[in-house]
Image 1 (tube, rainbow, N blue to C red):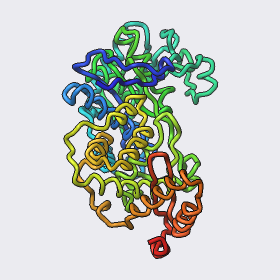
Image 2: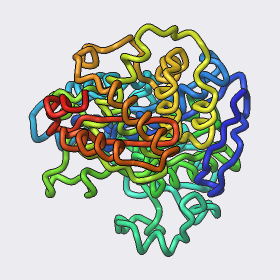
Image 3: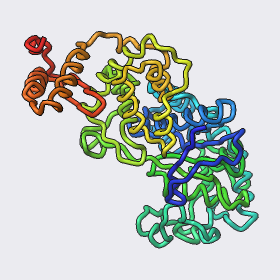
Image 4: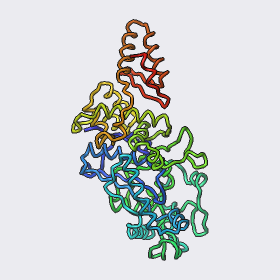
Length: 456
């Protein structure tokens, strides 16, 4: 069995993963608020933790892993969108939920075992809030219910911040009914024009944080194995989840392991509408970028490092996948994935290392392992897609030519032939990647195959 090690945000250490129950490995990932299309940054945790889900299923068995990812379908952003458009809230959330599932499916993400909607779990949220009040961890005030941060001494442990630091660095809502500025909303009143449910504190709706605590408890239990999401959720969302869950469930932890992926950039800059570099997954798909190419670019960067989406990476990813798909086209797909690739994934989900192993397989032309390994990463699951069947220029002969020339040059110390071949390739618009195991040639946007005639 592959040993899995994960960097636990809670302990700030890479630890061997030992599930509470190997017969039922449980993972919760915070899902989207459904009011619009998912932007590219929203897709990163979906793809990252989809790979973890696949790895857990491979190691423990598909029937022994439970994956939950929620939909927040009651939120002020949704209310605002309904007010702007004049459309019913239910229509908006149903449409955008399906958009999300369609777009993430195109990226090769498996659907989780459970995809709860917040509005389906209001009774569980009310019950949890009642427990918190009864135990002195929450209080009602002016139609609101607030969690008392002072009542939970471990508050701030996940993010490693003191309460004073959190107050200074956060946008804390100042309200006269709060006992402490850091106290956060569990329940808030709803006017007649907003969604609302009856409760002991009047008609209202839940705060954001209580949703995940109630759904995780209902579907995974008081304690479970892995809780994951983007690092922008670490504070306050995940910090608040831990506080209310531990207090309501009388446990010392909510999840054993907390995982957080880093954020996404575009061409070296933070994605933002003001910079004109903000786009959705659907924008890319509509431009003709295959979903598997988007996924492959994501996997090229370790999840705990910032990921930079660039046009160059997109072009390289498409060329590489076309090559690999052709190599693996006729291979069996029912064999064990490549051992070193599994080890890379087991080492804190090192997808970049796993891709390096795929390059090794490609150079060795070990196509049986190449196909099964691609499938484990969520690629080539349905054979060769139509976009990859398009015959781009076959550079394999030039890869062999350059590799053999380099091998001879290493013995003779005469690199003139290597330099001649490289110069012709570069002039033709070919990017060259050389390693000890082989040569990869990737066509750039200015590729001109006619300039390679001199090398034949």
